[in-house]
Image (cartoon, rainbow, N blue to C red; front, side, top):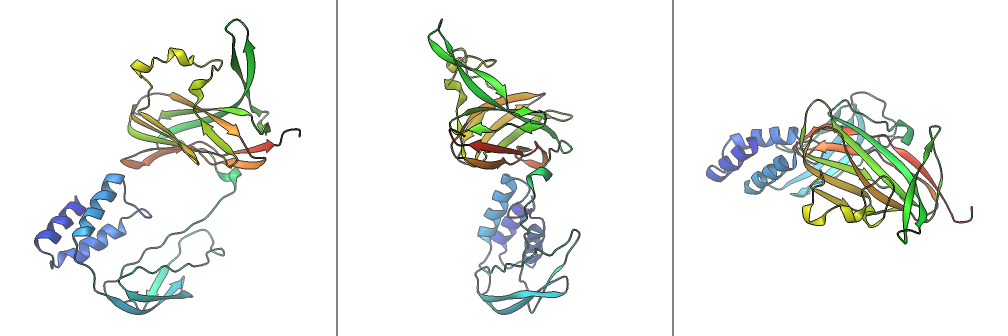
Length: 291
């Protein structure tokens, strides 16, 4: 609503004294590079396109981190300036970024990038979704009666440890997602793919415990999710409505030897991303053939 109001004011009264304050409020309520939802982000961008172009500014701005000099940014015209600050020595807790010498009306934002060890990437069901992820190696079995191969499932997690796989192995991934407390509308489940593996559609195979591909009924498509994308780095699933626990499967093919980490599966509501959940990270070892 605030962005729509800004768009209206900027259209009807482009020199209104309200515009700087409203613009600052919108910028202060960003969440990283975006706003609460894709719809909110789109609305703010549309409003920004109506605003008058800013005046060109120039000069040097000194940047302080917790009162200590962190660098200097040189302003040249209307283009944004980026200053990278070494944050490797920062400790946990609040920190303050201050700018001196900044011209009136200048806005800035900060972003902190960091990484964590895979063992620290644990599941979290406290914010709206309960998630789990299971990996099983597929072993081909010849079905002489039906003159075809079927695949039996062998769990990779044994005694709390992931068993190694071999280049060429097919791995069945089963994702379980359940809203906590109430049904969910317009949700996304995003499952990162470990490096060295490729995502495949499992429906071309006859897998023990799964519905036979010929029984899906392509003319009566009734999966609980509305769409699924098999991408290079992740598998994304979209659902209009979800109540209770549901499962989705897809395949991975091990292609490159090495040790790789599958980052946590992430489920969230598209229009309320604070309602979310994570499954824990998993580390794979892929052996070369003959090892």
